[in-house]
Length: 129
Image 1: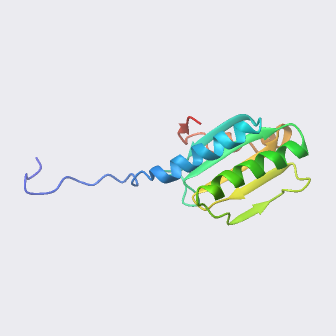
Image 2: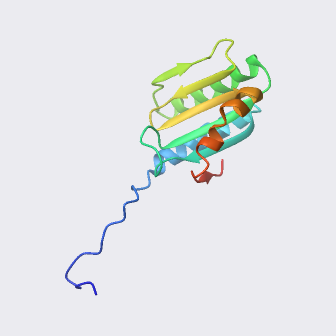
Image 3: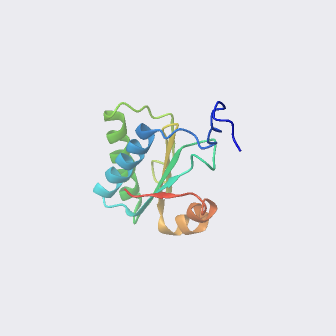
């Protein structure tokens, strides 16, 4: 039995960063506004050290991928986030936007199926956009 004078064991779960989750939801909603398909938010706080959240969506053309990425970037920058890095914006079939604690992936459907990030992070909880 635990001594009442001894503090209870601290949980190993990291503190919830409401700002990161709010920004992930904002990114997902910005993607949806640009007609992204199958938008998904994965909570990686307990499973990964490289990001807190992944936002994944699909588009049907190179131009749509660019529009989705631009919409997400514009929204998060307007909310005070800094884009750390980006890959695949012009003519790519997979666009990656790195905001540090949030990483956004926008794929053509074929590439999304091939790389299967949802399967890779199958144990990560999903967050509603």
